[in-house]
Length: 144
Image 1 (cartoon, one colour):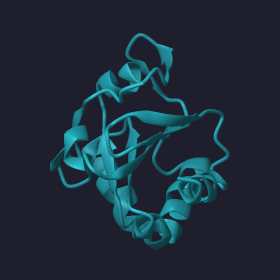
Image 2: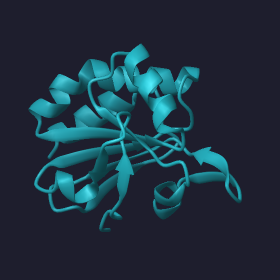
Image 3: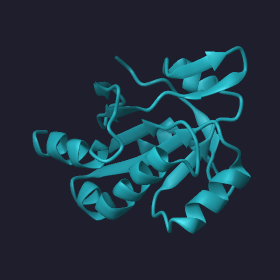
């Protein structure tokens, strides 16, 4: 299945589009909320494994429905080394089928997508364990 295109601001307000990552593997992970225990565990795990992930030709992006301002604080507090994108309206979260909630009130369901260099989703990880997400991705990148 083809990954859905998007254009969202990162923690610094800079726009990122799916097409910016063409030709690379992309780990696109959705998480519920900045500063919560599970989400902090997940982003810090990606931070700690980013060199190994990039060595395998992949890039990492996190997306939640938090604001750019919240992302900036979260990014700085945890010394993140990959971009986290703000989807305040929940449009991308809904496009990827990971919205949890009612109407406009909700969060992203913790889900990770592994996207190949041609923009195809090759694996979807649901019910993600935040402490194992990055290591599961590394193991699957080793198989590619």
